[in-house]
Image (cartoon, rainbow, N blue to C red; front, side, top):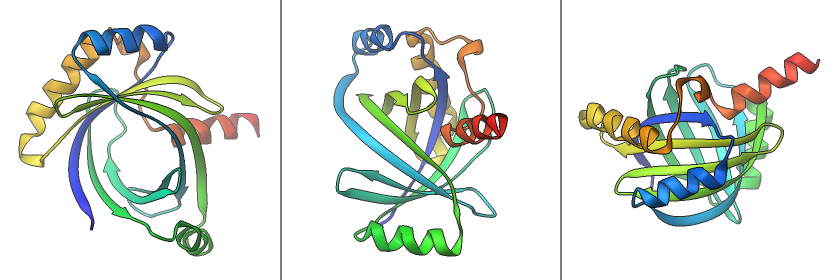
Amino acid sequence: MSRAHVNAEFKARCSDPREAIRRVRAAGARWLSREHQVDTYYRVAEGRLKIREVGTRAVLVWYFRGDTLRSKRSDVLLLPVSDPISVKRTLSRDLGVKVVVDKVRRVYLRENVRVHIDEVVGLGQFVEIEAVGQAKNFRLLQKQAQEMARVLGLHSSDLIRGSYSDLLLAKRSRSA
C-alpha cells in the first residue's frame, strides 16, 4: 500500500556526530534504528525517483522538493517493492541510473520529527531533520524542523542545498 506525506526538512554537514546524538537525546528524542541504506536514483523529468534498499526491504520513493538552504518542503510518495531486483533492472533499462547513494543512518524520533545522523560513502557525516505530517500543517512542520535545528546547534554555514545524490554528482563532475 502506498503512503503520501509532506516533510519540512533540513540537511547539514555534521562535524561531530557524537555531539549531535547527545543533543538530540537531551531534547527527548528516542533512538529508533541503525540502517544501512542504498538509494538508487533514476533519471526522471520531474522530481526525484529512487529505490531505497534497507536489508531485505525495499521501497520506491518519488518526491518533489525545492533545493534551498531553508527548511525544504518535500512531497513524498512511498510504495513498497516486493521484487527490488526486477524493478531496479526495469527502471535502469528504461530510465537509466543517475547515481547510487550508500549510507549508514542512525534514526532518532521526537514526536513527528525524525533526526538522521548519516555517514554517506564518499561524502562524510551529515545530520538530516524531517518533520513529517500533512500539507495543511506545513507551517507547523517548518517550525518543528527549525526548532530541532536550533537544538542541534546547526549554523547556516552547515546547511546544504540539495540531496546527497546532488553532492555525489557534483563531486563526480569535479573529478572528471
